[in-house]
Image 1 (cartoon, rainbow, N blue to C red):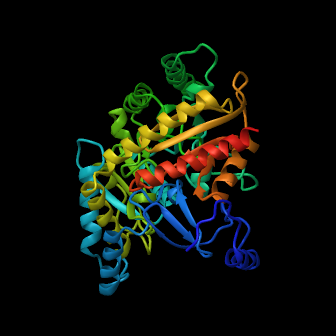
Image 2: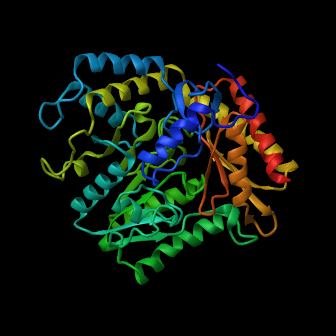
Length: 442
């Protein structure tokens, strides 16, 4: 195994990339040209033996780290027993047990029920189906900068045009978008509470001018916007959305696909705001990389669709459910919600110290270990530094660190390190990142 200070794709990665270009469609994008061989915890080894620190975690899929021994063991034991019978044909205990645990742990002091699907987009699709079935209404409201997936409905609810929506219309009808508080880019002099009030008051004008509330089945929101740039709202804003939903009988859907499973310092991000949604969508770190998602909601809502109206052939496979049960055990046994708070505090404090040194850093924000920096060409105009952000991402991977960009203007550096990352690995990753920022600032 080798560790290069300045790595370029090695021979094996180059060969695999040529095969990829010949055999795989262009659409599935990848951040680095390095091809993975193995991974453990927060460390990835590529096919040429290079060791890379992972600050991306598979876009938030690896909260408990790559190949956690407990998850690997659970998967191995399940595959030796049965791989898939289809829950709709011959059900199994692990599906029920995982549903029971999610019903218990998901925010909300009310009886809940759960169904499983395969991906985050499927979870959102099913949450919308349930909300429409329950209310008899058709409209669904999301927010500016939202990201909910790449299927027709979820793409329609998503706000970023390029690359996610460009050329794929027409989109699903009866989808609408409202502003979401972005305190860094609020009008100069406006306080956060004033922006919250302005947006919440806008709902009433929206109901008059765009769509009547008695036609809105659901409002779906990310507690912290992911692809939108790790935008963190205030508790007052989230609570205000909850009040609006209650006032008009609208189903509140929390998209916890990226924010769930200890990422924000709580098991679920909505706990940070003191709000329980009617339906919660879960995926990504739910099963440490196995394809699984969940829709957990009020029992009386979840039971409205009849037998056969929800589901899917591979949904909630025994192997994925076994992994999901192991994930919940690991989070509790290793105190990963507390660890997320420690990691997040360390990263935010470090980024804020850099903000004082490097003018390119316009804003630093995050919740728990879901942390971001927004890069700008000028702090006064706040012009997005898209090219510099891209350069930082490239400089990082070429020096042994995987990071991601985000935001409508692709000028936000976002970080989702595995919560099992060691202090030494975190320090080394932050050193690489700082050097990349220095290089991009020149």
